[in-house]
Image (cartoon, rainbow, N blue to C red; front, side, top):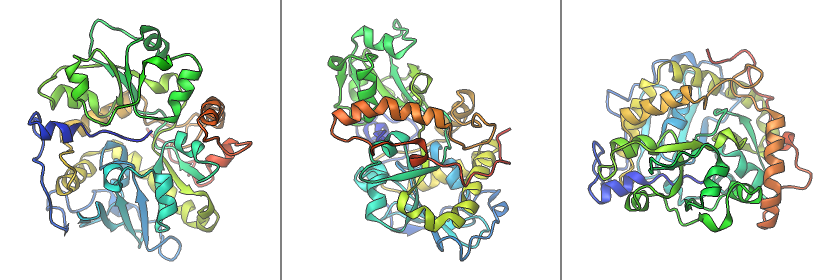
Length: 387
């Protein structure tokens, strides 16, 4: 799903932000302050030799600004990373591996180009974060392959503010006839096609802010991410400042979110690199969940230096996201007990559910698409699991 979390841009523009940094421009390139610039405490433990095996700079494209979803990636940055404010990037040693890591912001930072599109435009990008829906939708024209499933359950949710409503299933929302404010996403065709939602209740005009939600007193249902909007609405949006109710999409729809993937035609030539690199991402998530503060502090610092039109992070928001990653089972071991693996039966179910709607929309998946075409566990270290 394309991320449209620009709530902070709105609260900044109308003066409703609580504890968010002011909007403004930044200088071109800086080092983070001493409080956040020393890299993560565990970075020296990432010492698998990558020099001469991986690119000298491993470029990772994210799909949004720094946020809790990418905490494990920032965990890998070694000492004194540099912030390129003009290009919305941060780079530094990839632990003690002998190569560098460059993390690129997505969403507004790249004019909302998808990671699939950026793969095609810039050959320097080795890895990128994509939702598996995107991988399946683009499998015919812009194929890519997921090599790690950081999230076992998508943080995607539908939320509402009317406390008298108590939707328990997606079908409950559909039967209510309540307006569902969303973007234009692949999974919606599946939900409508299966009769869970009514086409007439779908409003595709969501542009990322929360003004309409607040203006309508939360009586509509809106798409969002459980690691973001609930905390912001309760703590950062003074015009709302109360909890919302939500329903997790992943309880009924087998999506994999924020899959770490590679352009398909680059897979063979990078096999040796990926066999060493992917386990580092696995270990980084284990370390990040055990002690998220260093990476969170770095992401707060990085975001504060970028011209994000008001999007900011706070320690409270990130801490709440870390709690939800664990308590809601967003980040957990795969069905085989290994962190980061894909369930091929679940991937097949997703392909099956998406194909009719994508075909009707004129973007059919590759003919005969199978799970092995879009995901692989080849590079996973089966000895790495979350406690």
